Length: 171
Image (cartoon, rainbow, N blue to C red; front, side):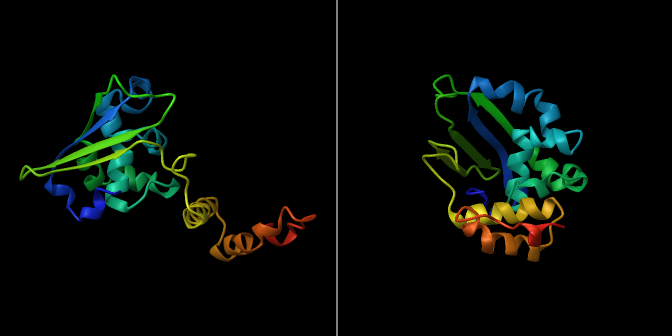
């Protein structure tokens, strides 16, 4: 998503190379052709090429990014087919979860992002706004209307202060 902030159209991208740990390859990268074109929404969740492409094009990879529509979206699939990996033998996984993405454009320019820690972990925690946005997305995916989710967020701070009556939040 940080690379997408450069405003580069997916069609300008020649390839995307990710350095990864050997421990990720079997779950998230192989077989590469299947990961670049997942068979269904469930398979897309466990595909790094798809996750990178859907986040780049839609701005996120929350639960709503894994639908029949996104799994067949030609722009997402085209970009996913440009995503590949190289194993970094020095990657500290599983002691540390890192990230590295290098995007090369057809005109030869290259952009790179490297993360020493997973976003949302102890070293790079999510902000309260990030957590609330994620909650709202998850709640919407689960069928909650926005008003119900907002009521939950307004009251969540008091849930641990005393006995809680959750009757107002039940569907």
